[in-house]
Image (cartoon, rainbow, N blue to C red; front, side, top):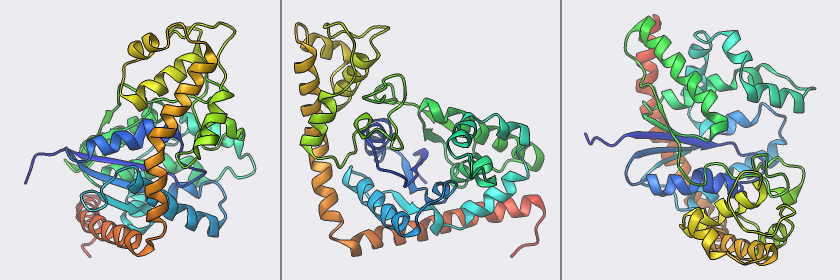
Amino acid sequence: MDDKKIIFSGIQPTGCITLGNYLGALKNWVSLQHDYHCCFSVVDMHSITVRQDPVALRKRCMEFLAQYLACGIDGEENLVFFQSHVPAHAELAWVLNCNVYMGELSRMTQFKDKSAKHENNINAGLFTYPVLMAADILLYKTDLVPVGSDQKQHLELARDVAIRFNNLYGETFTVPEPFIPKEGARVMSLQDPTSKMSKSDPNVNGFISILDKPEDIARKFKRAVTDSESEVAYREGKDGVNNLLSIYASVTGKTVDEAVAEFAGCGYGVFKERVGEAVAEELRPIRERYEDLMKNKDYLETVYRTGAEKARGITARTMSKVYRKVGFVNR
Protein backbone atom coordinates (compact mmCIF):
# COMPACT_ATOMS: atom_id res chain seq x y z
CA MET A 1 0.00 0.00 0.00
CA ASP A 2 1.45 3.40 -0.98
CA ASP A 3 1.51 6.36 1.37
CA LYS A 4 -0.38 8.79 -0.83
CA LYS A 5 -2.94 10.84 1.06
CA ILE A 6 -6.61 10.83 0.08
CA ILE A 7 -8.43 13.91 -1.21
CA PHE A 8 -12.19 14.32 -1.65
CA SER A 9 -13.90 17.20 -3.40
CA GLY A 10 -17.08 17.86 -5.37
CA ILE A 11 -19.17 20.54 -7.03
CA GLN A 12 -22.97 20.78 -7.10
CA PRO A 13 -24.38 20.52 -10.65
CA THR A 14 -26.31 23.78 -10.44
CA GLY A 15 -25.91 26.72 -12.78
CA CYS A 16 -22.56 26.42 -14.52
CA ILE A 17 -18.93 25.83 -13.61
CA THR A 18 -17.44 29.29 -13.31
CA LEU A 19 -13.97 30.71 -13.58
CA GLY A 20 -14.09 30.88 -9.77
CA ASN A 21 -14.81 27.14 -9.54
CA TYR A 22 -12.02 26.45 -12.02
CA LEU A 23 -9.31 28.59 -10.40
CA GLY A 24 -10.41 27.84 -6.84
CA ALA A 25 -11.04 24.12 -7.25
CA LEU A 26 -10.71 22.32 -10.59
CA LYS A 27 -7.32 23.69 -11.64
CA ASN A 28 -6.06 22.77 -8.21
CA TRP A 29 -7.56 19.27 -8.54
CA VAL A 30 -5.65 18.74 -11.77
CA SER A 31 -2.35 19.64 -10.11
CA LEU A 32 -3.07 17.34 -7.15
CA GLN A 33 -4.36 14.27 -8.95
CA HIS A 34 -1.03 12.51 -9.54
CA ASP A 35 0.31 13.03 -6.02
CA TYR A 36 -2.79 11.95 -4.10
CA HIS A 37 -5.58 9.38 -4.28
CA CYS A 38 -8.37 11.67 -5.45
CA CYS A 39 -12.15 11.30 -5.26
CA PHE A 40 -13.93 13.88 -7.42
CA SER A 41 -17.71 13.70 -7.28
CA VAL A 42 -20.53 15.50 -9.03
CA VAL A 43 -22.50 15.98 -5.81
CA ASP A 44 -25.98 15.81 -7.32
CA MET A 45 -27.70 14.88 -4.04
CA HIS A 46 -26.76 18.26 -2.60
CA SER A 47 -28.39 20.10 -5.48
CA ILE A 48 -31.96 19.03 -4.66
CA THR A 49 -32.12 21.08 -1.45
CA VAL A 50 -33.35 23.68 -3.98
CA ARG A 51 -36.10 22.65 -6.42
CA GLN A 52 -34.64 21.42 -9.72
CA ASP A 53 -36.14 20.62 -13.08
CA PRO A 54 -35.42 16.85 -13.35
CA VAL A 55 -34.66 16.85 -17.08
CA ALA A 56 -32.37 19.86 -16.77
CA LEU A 57 -30.60 18.41 -13.71
CA ARG A 58 -29.91 15.09 -15.45
CA LYS A 59 -28.47 16.92 -18.47
CA ARG A 60 -26.41 19.26 -16.31
CA CYS A 61 -24.90 16.34 -14.35
CA MET A 62 -23.50 14.91 -17.58
CA GLU A 63 -22.25 18.35 -18.60
CA PHE A 64 -20.47 18.84 -15.28
CA LEU A 65 -18.83 15.40 -15.55
CA ALA A 66 -17.60 16.30 -19.05
CA GLN A 67 -16.28 19.63 -17.75
CA TYR A 68 -14.35 17.86 -14.96
CA LEU A 69 -12.62 15.75 -17.60
CA ALA A 70 -12.17 18.67 -20.00
CA CYS A 71 -10.34 20.61 -17.30
CA GLY A 72 -7.79 17.81 -17.11
CA ILE A 73 -9.14 15.40 -14.49
CA ASP A 74 -8.05 11.86 -15.42
CA GLY A 75 -11.20 9.73 -15.25
CA GLU A 76 -9.18 6.52 -15.07
CA GLU A 77 -6.55 7.49 -12.53
CA ASN A 78 -9.03 9.17 -10.17
CA LEU A 79 -12.37 8.20 -8.64
CA VAL A 80 -14.89 10.26 -10.68
CA PHE A 81 -18.56 9.55 -10.05
CA PHE A 82 -22.06 10.83 -9.37
CA GLN A 83 -22.79 11.06 -5.64
CA SER A 84 -26.29 9.57 -6.08
CA HIS A 85 -24.79 6.40 -7.59
CA VAL A 86 -23.16 5.53 -4.25
CA PRO A 87 -25.92 4.80 -1.67
CA ALA A 88 -23.48 4.90 1.25
CA HIS A 89 -23.46 8.72 1.09
CA ALA A 90 -27.09 8.79 2.23
CA GLU A 91 -26.61 5.87 4.64
CA LEU A 92 -23.71 7.47 6.49
CA ALA A 93 -25.47 10.84 6.51
CA TRP A 94 -28.28 9.30 8.59
CA VAL A 95 -25.86 7.84 11.15
CA LEU A 96 -24.03 11.17 11.38
CA ASN A 97 -27.34 13.04 11.67
CA CYS A 98 -27.82 11.15 14.92
CA ASN A 99 -24.45 12.46 16.14
CA VAL A 100 -24.77 16.12 15.13
CA TYR A 101 -26.64 18.67 17.24
CA MET A 102 -29.34 21.07 16.10
CA GLY A 103 -27.40 23.98 17.54
CA GLU A 104 -24.36 23.14 15.39
CA LEU A 105 -26.44 23.11 12.22
CA SER A 106 -28.34 26.27 13.08
CA ARG A 107 -25.04 28.16 13.19
CA MET A 108 -24.17 27.32 9.58
CA THR A 109 -23.99 30.62 7.69
CA GLN A 110 -24.86 29.02 4.34
CA PHE A 111 -28.14 27.72 5.79
CA LYS A 112 -29.02 31.25 6.81
CA ASP A 113 -28.06 32.62 3.38
CA LYS A 114 -29.96 29.98 1.40
CA SER A 115 -33.00 30.20 3.68
CA ALA A 116 -33.20 33.91 2.89
CA LYS A 117 -33.01 33.20 -0.85
CA HIS A 118 -35.47 30.28 -0.81
CA GLU A 119 -37.88 31.23 1.96
CA ASN A 120 -40.72 29.23 0.36
CA ASN A 121 -38.68 26.02 0.50
CA ILE A 122 -36.73 25.89 3.77
CA ASN A 123 -36.62 22.09 3.85
CA ALA A 124 -34.91 19.71 6.27
CA GLY A 125 -32.31 18.82 3.63
CA LEU A 126 -31.24 22.45 3.43
CA PHE A 127 -30.71 22.36 7.20
CA THR A 128 -28.85 19.04 7.31
CA TYR A 129 -26.89 19.10 4.08
CA PRO A 130 -23.60 19.88 5.93
CA VAL A 131 -24.05 16.41 7.48
CA LEU A 132 -24.28 14.88 4.00
CA MET A 133 -21.12 16.81 3.15
CA ALA A 134 -19.44 15.32 6.21
CA ALA A 135 -20.52 11.85 5.04
CA ASP A 136 -19.07 12.54 1.58
CA ILE A 137 -15.72 13.28 3.16
CA LEU A 138 -15.57 10.66 5.91
CA LEU A 139 -16.63 7.72 3.74
CA TYR A 140 -13.30 7.68 1.91
CA LYS A 141 -10.91 8.10 4.87
CA THR A 142 -10.18 11.51 3.42
CA ASP A 143 -7.01 13.22 4.65
CA LEU A 144 -7.37 16.53 2.84
CA VAL A 145 -10.31 18.55 1.50
CA PRO A 146 -9.63 21.43 -0.91
CA VAL A 147 -11.93 24.16 0.39
CA GLY A 148 -12.51 27.84 -0.08
CA SER A 149 -12.96 30.01 2.97
CA ASP A 150 -16.76 29.83 2.56
CA GLN A 151 -16.73 26.05 3.12
CA LYS A 152 -14.35 25.95 6.09
CA GLN A 153 -17.29 25.98 8.52
CA HIS A 154 -18.68 22.81 6.95
CA LEU A 155 -15.31 21.09 7.09
CA GLU A 156 -15.06 22.02 10.77
CA LEU A 157 -18.39 20.25 11.32
CA ALA A 158 -17.05 17.15 9.53
CA ARG A 159 -14.00 17.21 11.77
CA ASP A 160 -16.11 17.68 14.91
CA VAL A 161 -18.47 14.81 14.12
CA ALA A 162 -15.55 12.51 13.20
CA ILE A 163 -13.85 13.22 16.53
CA ARG A 164 -17.14 12.83 18.42
CA PHE A 165 -17.90 9.48 16.74
CA ASN A 166 -14.35 8.23 17.34
CA ASN A 167 -14.59 9.16 21.02
CA LEU A 168 -17.95 7.40 21.41
CA TYR A 169 -17.31 4.24 19.40
CA GLY A 170 -13.54 3.92 19.00
CA GLU A 171 -11.26 4.87 16.14
CA THR A 172 -13.40 4.83 12.99
CA PHE A 173 -12.92 7.95 10.86
CA THR A 174 -9.88 9.82 9.62
CA VAL A 175 -10.16 13.43 10.79
CA PRO A 176 -9.77 15.52 7.60
CA GLU A 177 -7.65 18.64 7.22
CA PRO A 178 -8.34 21.61 4.94
CA PHE A 179 -6.21 22.08 1.84
CA ILE A 180 -6.39 25.75 0.85
CA PRO A 181 -4.39 26.90 -2.19
CA LYS A 182 -2.51 30.17 -1.77
CA GLU A 183 -3.54 31.72 -5.09
CA GLY A 184 -6.89 31.82 -6.85
CA ALA A 185 -8.83 30.28 -3.99
CA ARG A 186 -11.40 33.05 -3.93
CA VAL A 187 -12.38 34.71 -7.21
CA MET A 188 -14.78 37.60 -6.78
CA SER A 189 -17.70 38.81 -8.89
CA LEU A 190 -16.75 41.04 -11.81
CA GLN A 191 -19.71 43.29 -10.98
CA ASP A 192 -19.47 43.23 -7.18
CA PRO A 193 -15.85 42.51 -6.23
CA THR A 194 -16.76 42.35 -2.54
CA SER A 195 -18.76 39.16 -3.21
CA LYS A 196 -17.53 35.76 -4.34
CA MET A 197 -18.06 34.91 -8.03
CA SER A 198 -21.20 32.75 -8.04
CA LYS A 199 -22.89 30.65 -10.68
CA SER A 200 -26.23 31.67 -9.14
CA ASP A 201 -25.55 35.39 -9.68
CA PRO A 202 -28.60 36.84 -11.50
CA ASN A 203 -26.23 39.25 -13.29
CA VAL A 204 -24.53 37.20 -16.03
CA ASN A 205 -21.82 39.86 -16.29
CA GLY A 206 -20.71 39.02 -12.74
CA PHE A 207 -19.30 35.59 -13.59
CA ILE A 208 -17.38 33.81 -16.33
CA SER A 209 -18.49 30.30 -17.30
CA ILE A 210 -15.62 28.04 -18.32
CA LEU A 211 -17.62 27.38 -21.50
CA ASP A 212 -18.05 31.07 -22.38
CA LYS A 213 -16.90 32.05 -25.87
CA PRO A 214 -13.90 34.43 -26.18
CA GLU A 215 -16.09 37.34 -27.29
CA ASP A 216 -18.34 36.91 -24.24
CA ILE A 217 -15.33 36.73 -21.92
CA ALA A 218 -13.90 39.91 -23.47
CA ARG A 219 -17.24 41.71 -23.08
CA LYS A 220 -17.63 40.71 -19.41
CA PHE A 221 -14.11 41.82 -18.51
CA LYS A 222 -14.58 45.07 -20.38
CA ARG A 223 -17.58 45.76 -18.10
CA ALA A 224 -15.78 44.62 -14.93
CA VAL A 225 -16.05 47.04 -12.00
CA THR A 226 -12.77 48.72 -11.02
CA ASP A 227 -12.55 52.14 -9.29
CA SER A 228 -12.25 55.85 -10.01
CA GLU A 229 -8.44 55.77 -10.02
CA SER A 230 -6.32 54.77 -12.99
CA GLU A 231 -3.37 52.93 -11.39
CA VAL A 232 -3.15 49.16 -11.69
CA ALA A 233 -2.04 48.35 -8.14
CA TYR A 234 -2.84 45.72 -5.54
CA ARG A 235 -3.86 47.35 -2.27
CA GLU A 236 -6.71 47.79 0.17
CA GLY A 237 -9.70 49.66 -1.23
CA LYS A 238 -9.10 48.52 -4.82
CA ASP A 239 -11.27 45.38 -4.69
CA GLY A 240 -12.09 45.30 -8.40
CA VAL A 241 -8.50 45.78 -9.55
CA ASN A 242 -7.22 43.35 -6.89
CA ASN A 243 -9.65 40.72 -8.20
CA LEU A 244 -8.54 41.16 -11.81
CA LEU A 245 -4.87 41.01 -10.81
CA SER A 246 -5.50 37.82 -8.84
CA ILE A 247 -7.32 36.26 -11.80
CA TYR A 248 -4.54 37.27 -14.20
CA ALA A 249 -1.86 35.87 -11.89
CA SER A 250 -3.78 32.58 -11.54
CA VAL A 251 -4.23 31.97 -15.27
CA THR A 252 -0.72 33.04 -16.29
CA GLY A 253 1.23 31.48 -13.42
CA LYS A 254 2.74 34.85 -12.51
CA THR A 255 2.78 36.41 -9.08
CA VAL A 256 0.54 39.38 -8.33
CA ASP A 257 3.66 41.56 -8.02
CA GLU A 258 4.80 40.48 -11.48
CA ALA A 259 1.35 41.27 -12.85
CA VAL A 260 1.40 44.72 -11.26
CA ALA A 261 4.81 45.40 -12.83
CA GLU A 262 3.59 44.22 -16.22
CA PHE A 263 0.69 46.67 -16.22
CA ALA A 264 2.61 49.67 -14.87
CA GLY A 265 1.51 52.75 -16.80
CA CYS A 266 -1.41 50.95 -18.47
CA GLY A 267 -4.93 52.32 -18.27
CA TYR A 268 -7.80 50.19 -17.03
CA GLY A 269 -9.08 49.65 -20.57
CA VAL A 270 -5.89 47.93 -21.70
CA PHE A 271 -5.59 46.12 -18.37
CA LYS A 272 -9.10 44.63 -18.57
CA GLU A 273 -8.63 43.68 -22.21
CA ARG A 274 -5.41 41.80 -21.47
CA VAL A 275 -6.92 39.98 -18.49
CA GLY A 276 -9.86 38.94 -20.70
CA GLU A 277 -7.49 37.66 -23.39
CA ALA A 278 -5.48 35.64 -20.86
CA VAL A 279 -8.64 34.06 -19.42
CA ALA A 280 -10.03 33.28 -22.89
CA GLU A 281 -6.76 31.57 -23.83
CA GLU A 282 -6.74 29.55 -20.60
CA LEU A 283 -10.32 28.35 -21.16
CA ARG A 284 -10.15 27.75 -24.93
CA PRO A 285 -8.74 24.17 -24.80
CA ILE A 286 -11.22 23.29 -22.03
CA ARG A 287 -14.16 24.36 -24.16
CA GLU A 288 -12.80 22.42 -27.16
CA ARG A 289 -12.23 19.23 -25.12
CA TYR A 290 -15.68 19.59 -23.57
CA GLU A 291 -17.33 19.75 -27.00
CA ASP A 292 -15.50 16.57 -28.06
CA LEU A 293 -16.43 14.74 -24.85
CA MET A 294 -20.12 15.59 -25.15
CA LYS A 295 -20.10 13.79 -28.52
CA ASN A 296 -18.75 10.66 -26.81
CA LYS A 297 -21.49 9.70 -24.33
CA ASP A 298 -20.28 6.07 -24.23
CA TYR A 299 -16.93 7.17 -22.80
CA LEU A 300 -18.60 9.44 -20.22
CA GLU A 301 -20.83 6.55 -19.16
CA THR A 302 -17.80 4.27 -18.79
CA VAL A 303 -16.09 6.84 -16.55
CA TYR A 304 -19.02 7.38 -14.18
CA ARG A 305 -20.06 3.72 -14.02
CA THR A 306 -16.50 2.54 -13.31
CA GLY A 307 -16.00 5.32 -10.76
CA ALA A 308 -19.22 4.51 -8.93
CA GLU A 309 -18.43 0.79 -8.85
CA LYS A 310 -15.04 1.47 -7.23
CA ALA A 311 -16.59 4.00 -4.85
CA ARG A 312 -19.25 1.51 -3.77
CA GLY A 313 -16.52 -1.00 -2.93
CA ILE A 314 -14.62 1.51 -0.78
CA THR A 315 -17.70 2.86 0.97
CA ALA A 316 -19.15 -0.58 1.68
CA ARG A 317 -16.14 -1.29 3.87
CA THR A 318 -16.57 1.99 5.71
CA MET A 319 -20.29 1.39 6.28
CA SER A 320 -19.70 -2.17 7.48
CA LYS A 321 -17.34 -0.78 10.13
CA VAL A 322 -19.71 2.06 11.09
CA TYR A 323 -22.74 -0.22 11.38
CA ARG A 324 -20.82 -2.69 13.50
CA LYS A 325 -19.64 0.15 15.79
CA VAL A 326 -23.15 1.51 16.38
CA GLY A 327 -24.55 -1.96 17.09
CA PHE A 328 -26.41 -3.03 13.93
CA VAL A 329 -26.61 -6.74 13.13
CA ASN A 330 -24.14 -7.75 10.40
CA ARG A 331 -25.68 -7.93 6.93
